[in-house]
Image 1 (tube, rainbow, N blue to C red):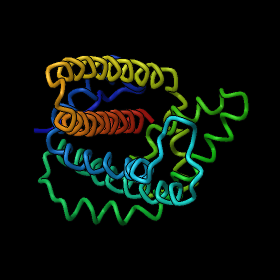
Image 2 (cartoon, helix red, strand yellow):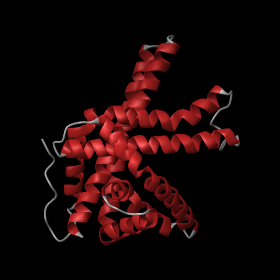
Image 3 (tube, helix red, strand yellow):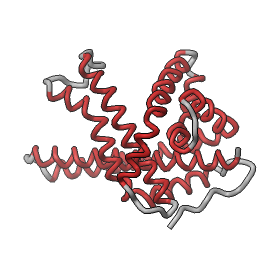
Image 4 (tube, rainbow, N blue to C red):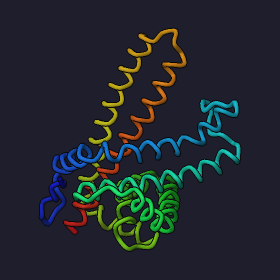
Length: 246
């Protein structure tokens, strides 16, 4: 089964169509992509695990330990690599192709030399943009929603990849922003519902601290993985429709 292609129009699909296509792609691929998503979330949390295990907390500002930040850079690179493999799987599975873990990891590794510099340049440009009265940073943040599919599915170097993101999204910027805001609100509502269920579970497991903590940890990772898969579906949908309308 494959996801219906975006409508062949001169303009990008409507906000409702973008959300519908994103939801369709997410539902079709979530179970197949969830393992990659969980690994990516776990890798991203490694620095925090280290910081807590070393007797610190995350409640009083940013850590100052150089090892924490070195570990953060490494964990971020690995998470980005796993996330890329997941997006490759999501796109292939939506097109009806067979799942091939080795091929997905190999292709993600092949694009990593472009992806990592692109990601670093993106962070730098966002920092500069937010320092310049915030508005340029917000503009770039929305444009960079399609950065990963641009790097994975188009032949660009790091600088041209960022330029390509702006070129794709700028004509439809307000529509993409509206889609992102609605999608994030939907994710937030779902997370609040899950949090309420966990509170109910906490009351039921009163006095069983380790059991509850294990359930909360597993649930948090699973929720994070689901969000990652959903945001990947959104990025793929935006890239596909913007490319077709270009």
